[in-house]
Length: 133
Image (tube, rainbow, N blue to C red; front, side):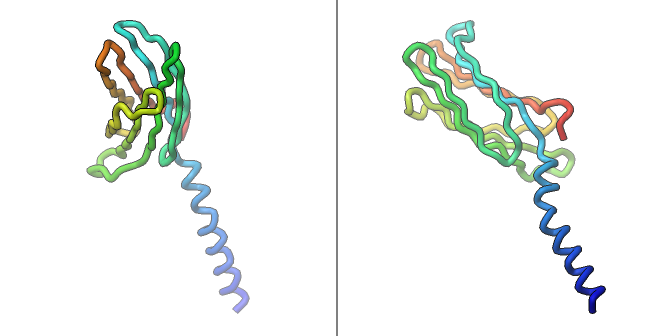
C-alpha cells in the first residue's frame, strides 16, 4: 500500500509540474509596431511577447497616441508545421481604426500594414527570437 501511495504522490507531483514545463517551452517573439508617414518611420516601439499571451504597446507622435493590443496564440495547423495567429486591435487616440489578424508559421517572421485615410501607415511585424525555445 505504501508503494502505491508513493507512486501516486510521484504521479501527482509530475502532473502538477507539467504546466511549468509546458510554459518554459513557449517561444519568445520580437514584436515591432511602427507609424510610417509617407516613406518615413516617425515612431517605432519594440517589445517581446511569448506565445499564448497578450501584448500591448503604445506610442505618441505629436499629439496623436497610437496603441496596439494583441493576442498571440497557437492554432491547429495541418500537422507539418506549428502555426501562430496574432489578433490585433489598432487604435488612434482611443478609437479603433483596424482589427487585423494574421496567421504565420511559428519559425517564420510576418508583417501586416494598415493604411489610414492620409499617408499614415501602421506596420506590425513579429519574428521569433534566436536562441529561445
